[in-house]
Image (tube, rainbow, N blue to C red; front, side):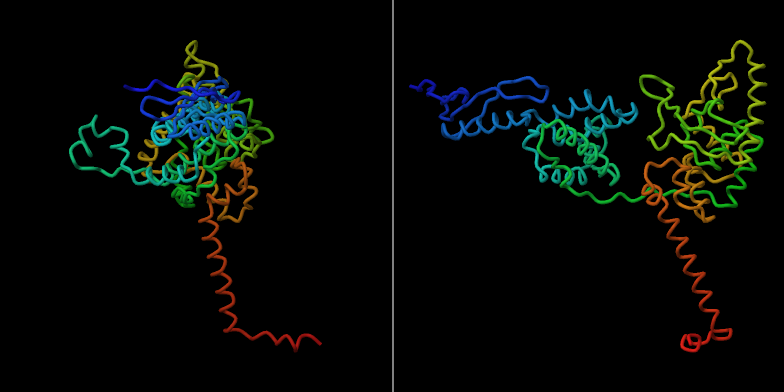
Length: 418
């Protein structure tokens, strides 16, 4: 005959402790969850003392503000209550996808208060070597990869791994700020440094060809402004006429036009606070902008009542905002028609910085023109250009020193100093 559960006397606040039918001891009590609500938890042990100690540890953690919730619970809370108010919508969408596809499947069941640096390192190592097609069940849907016994080994790129790690660090950093955790264990895990994205900026000759080919184009002023000032695509499309002072030759960069999932084409703040800036406009851009203004006035007259007065510098022929995706497609077609090699629109920005560096412009000036938050960003992105310029400078010095053998020698120092 099975013995009934035995409850024993307990100290005040210790919770309920009793022996189960299988002989194990069970302890239950209330602790604080990540949403601020107290909930009942159960722990088990082979002895009464073991169960009581486990429950006491959870209660002590709860009293210190350490949640018993899983990491998955906290990430959901963080995305919905914290990150959504601090991130741009498109960034929040990418964070959400990262959490859904990688962090919750890999670490979601871990108790956040018990998460260790070893857990994070093991997770990242596993993520680095696992075929994502199989992990996410895409092989079953497509009847490919492991579903047919031919794994495609579709692994995440190093940059994606670094991104996943950074999202986890951001979430845990907020938990530390809110006194949910004593430390951010993800910061103790080091990942390999991401290699700079490779890009092929326009050479001086190609840049001239680009500007020549752009002159007859309806968006000539936009292409010229992009190459000569390095403005981002969204910054160009978000420019209002009131942001330009064609008399003094300046432009105030205050906003960016982006397409978001919920709001469609939306004016958003610039990428960073440093991106909100005032820049000088080259003389060539002033001429092309004045011509563009005359062209837009003609289009307004042609469109009549169909004209939508948005106040934007660059619009459709009926005054509506230009969609960033449509500009990308139009840019590709323009390159093909002009017989120029395929580059991304963003490579015009890289071309601006590279050409300026090659002309000896100071890095600080380039940083301010591009609107980078820190000069380290500028220095890091264009490190390869600076290295090439260093080599050229060293070679120039070497040629100068080498040519001294052919001319008269300088007098020795001892003969000069009396």
